[in-house]
Image (tube, rainbow, N blue to C red; front, side, top):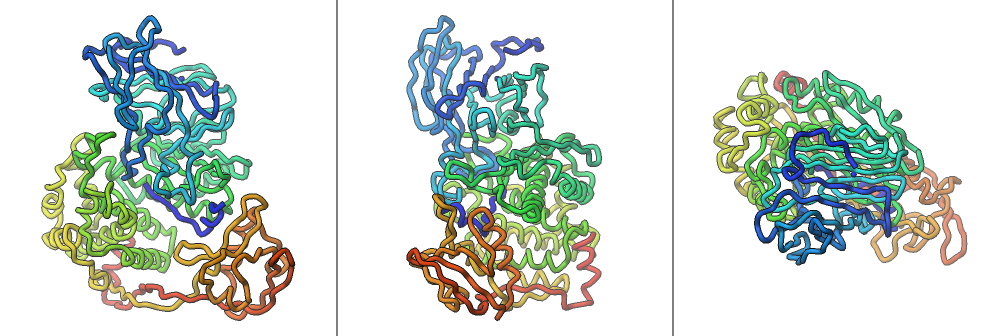
Length: 617
């Protein structure tokens, strides 16, 4: 999973099937999702029960799912759950908790039915609220237009039947097409049938229904499908395919012999940013798919850049945890999860690869790569740098560890970087962390998990004692990582410099907001404004109408933010505002806010060969 917070976060202030299997119906769980009849923004789900011999059975909707590292309680979106026997008589149902229902006289159970609400409608703020479901792990229901089906939001499981095959039928409008890495076993244009070997496989296969807007291409034997939902039609799958093909070709080249799937689907949902639409931007990985949610308001350059970052991160998850993982993940408990100690690898190394491959394959410059690592050092330093990473990982669902989760993308990636540098140094540049992951993949693999407590010893065995010491001291231990020491090994020096900061936002906190009623941009009241605002006499509550004779509102706020990034100190500027219902023009010069920024540069030419092996090897 990867979450994104954008500079314009400010705008958010604002399944009849053909029986083609010999398997007896009693040996499968059959589920039907009806997308044709949406009432009160709810979808009807019917689940036919397998043969049950116990007096009671519990049906559960997941509390959490792999890759989210949060307790989202998807059962809270389920209403009116009923259980029936073969004659259509109601059976007694008792709700145990937010995600679980007990059904009595279970041997007589024929089916259950319930209504599903979507999660996008309930997101508040920037989608990262206390009770928000991260959008790429959530669901959307727009009758006749779009259905984002993360299957765990719609279909649950009966206790002791998680290894039973699932047959899922989706009945849908003829004009909507279901994008997924699963294969539709029904030739009808209004009915899809998907078959999975067990519940966990179903959970890992999202489906997005919308009007066809997709492309497919092949990269080194892997078929890649891109499907896009763009509410206004601003973007097509075809419009972003060239960049995605370039990126995924580079990823495949970087990974080499590591390969885990022959088909990969990218589901891109573009949010309108309306009050009832998705606000949690980023992506969620699956073995053969990625769900991505981004705002449609983005300009193409920024959209493609964000897709490059989040999709590359999710794609690299085919290495870990989808191939290399612990027993906690292999035998994941959706309602009483036990978390692994190794988020530094699952998310951290994955994030490191998502950056390293870009410099390795020539998609970004060395300076770009150094800047990214420098920013991660800054962000990691702002979090609890003495909290043992393994301790945080194992307890990430609870406080105070939960608040430190975002460090998996910062310090987690830096852990990957340091291990990479150590291996390069000890092997004279011949090997790096990718070689380690290839060896771990051969040692374990998709169906062979490791024991959490044994991983560090295995890594040490496959690499060097120095790597084992690093893991002991800086990952399992509480000692902050001396980044200067490891950067120096490849001839890099870290320093601090003052640079111009963003005008309209500071550390992801905006100075401006948008009125959802009239789309006007205004300065937030009751906050301490920066030099730019103070120099021009802008005050809290001022409505920004024009800047340098260009009118701005919610529709082109992203243009305004992009333009501000081009301003230089002392540039002439005029801003037309409305203050207390009276328009006026403020004229003056640009005074930029400044902030300390970590700077990394190559200074030791004697380490150039090792540096090149690290970045390009």
